[in-house]
Image 1: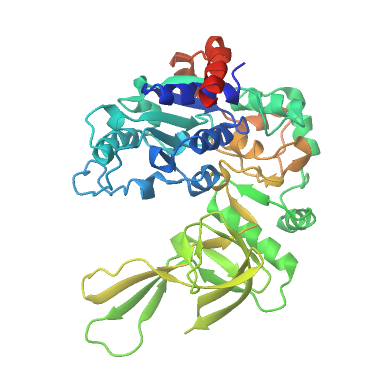
Image 2: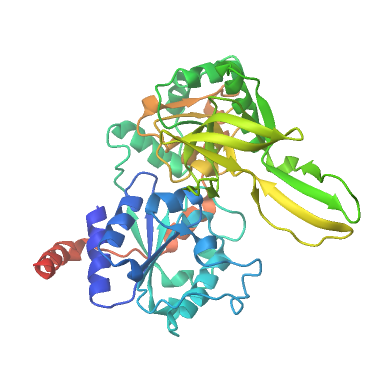
Length: 449
């Protein structure tokens, strides 16, 4: 069985020998993909590597940036001529993490962008490329990365030994089965023991169970934003903050009509969601924000609200405690285009949500201390496996409610594998590292001395 050390040795040897490689590192949640990427990067100079992920969470975990930020991706993915990149002649190793969340057209864009960054005409600008992730987890839609024209260039290395779940091998074995959509009658009893609301979904019961958890990285994982709002609201009610709770939309438009005197008009953008504001409520940053003290906060950072101020009825300033220190944040400006008969259209937003519940894809790549998965209305393809694999042991996992049926067929509504992915993985060639592993370790040690 291939270990993370084998992958590390292979990549380092190929980079030292200046041999270009294209590898897809496939591994289920908790198999050590992130750890491996960090180790390889630590052995290189910063100018030699570029670490990117499809999600903010993934980018934070590997110590990189989202692909959209790193490559300045435009709305028209085919328009690379207008993008100006800093010249990176020393760039050798590029990582593309959380590949299940990346569209196929981005792989073609990556080839063009790297050629421009390095100034070299070779494939991917002469860089070795490591795609990393779990294709069995959530995807972006119809345009899948394995449907890209240049996907065939990549050989697969598969990590199968779970590091996250070493304390509960039985749970690890269950996850392996669920990843491929395999459920057994006895799985029903497993979920029944983890069910918080056997008689029907009750938000108050779930909120009380969540608040009873020991402090830690605990989240309620939901299939959609509507459920997220309901659970966050239920928890806020149970917390009973000292001051009145305000509900504010994350995104507002500031409008001012041409040649009209007076203050601007604010229009809340409901489709972008809202969050609850009160002293003591926990929040999660969903994007980068900068405080008035010039403290830069990355996506995925947790904080606690210490207070807030309003302008014309709109929450506009927040005081948030992060790592024991208070910082002040205002709604940040996004754009100011000329639009129709409006003199200005200013978009203002908080990159914040309440930190109690979130949609499943926001937790992809995270390791949680405790997780409650809302199964009351079923889960989409790959969603159940993605959510259940966030925790280390079965004792850390709970579900809200299983719809009543006479047999275990309801599990099909929460554990559904992606059959297309199963076919792709079966066809993709495997790169066998095992025969070379001991030799590579020896050569790396000799090179180090």
